[in-house]
Image 1 (cartoon, rainbow, N blue to C red):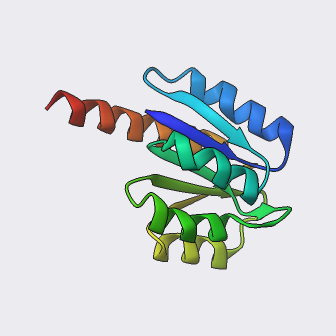
Image 2: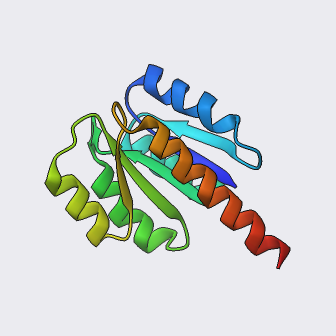
Length: 126
């Protein structure tokens, strides 16, 4: 499964990329630190899974999610933030995405990605 990570903080982005690269079948194909950089990268890569930080310097992960729903509706989306506001979870759920607190739910995020990779591999085999 091709994965694209959008997070404006380089260290958490690198940590997440390293953790996901340990999952068999997961490939981090791109990273970005802003909405504009993400749109440029996502436009030609078309990953199966996009992980979006909510707070970005030139917009929000929700802005990117809205763009993805039109430009790449087949992409799965996971939203992350270091701030676990209930409204973030609600809006993510309403948009068909899952939300994870990247500081307290890192292992749950990794497990969710592993489950998506496994489901995609299973789907390809059948």
